[in-house]
Image (cartoon, rainbow, N blue to C red; front, side):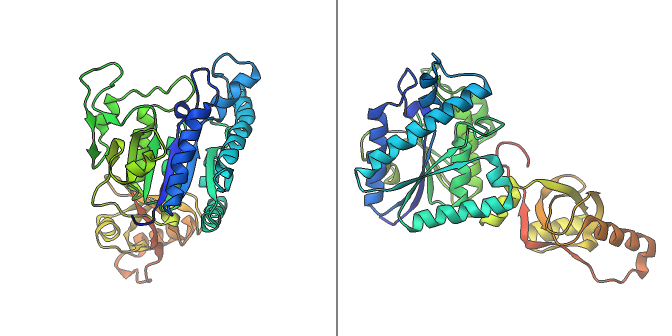
Length: 373
């Protein structure tokens, strides 16, 4: 079995009991399964939910709090309990773990994005198990990653994982809700996530979590766009993750022949960066950047919207559609000036074209979560 880099995502419902407390038996089952992966020399990153679910009882809540302050307070208590438990369990197998807390801003800020990648790479190089969660205690848009489903997809692309395993309390993706429809059929293998699948699933999470199957479909769609195959399902016992790798997992496998990794710079441009403006291009430029692997030159730009400087990210639009995003090599002012000169001088305009977006800093449209970026 070839060595793989694997991201394992565990949801709240797979970690806690009906009262919302950490279920030691469930947690130990996950720990043993991850240890078995490590014994086979696989690199593992664990994306674990459960902080809010583990903490709200300690605050005196009878059920999961609904206010932001309640959730964040519960996360502050629960995160400590969760990571302490994980570290104690893994240490018994001589496996060291490290806690990484992330927010959306850690992805959108280019410098923090690079720093996070460097930290995760160093931990993996040194044989440490990264345990990743959203930093719920300070996140303004609480649980914006969808019970960490989307976070696990972004992390899997970020570290160029060989696969993403999402463990949940349902054994895969169905063409209906198996809890309410006894005739619902499970998909054992899928090549893509279609829009019809989103309509067929329940988007509600459990009492102790926030993510439902829709959240997992969105995550799978994103992971596929970043070149990472996905498994969604459940399992029990120390060999459950090895069974997934061997193709015998109790769930749905999602992959296709056309999966290609996207480097981290392009991932940041496509999925995380904020656009500072729009550049409108003609048909010739559209064909050059989409089909011929060319850089975008000023000769193909006929309109600029917004104010941006060199190094900013902009959206590129044709007459009919959104094409993608890229990091510009010139300012909006320089580009507008070039467009005006070309209009005024017409056939006499002879200045060499500016390189607006280099092909290495350009990303074609990625349908990341069922909608355009």
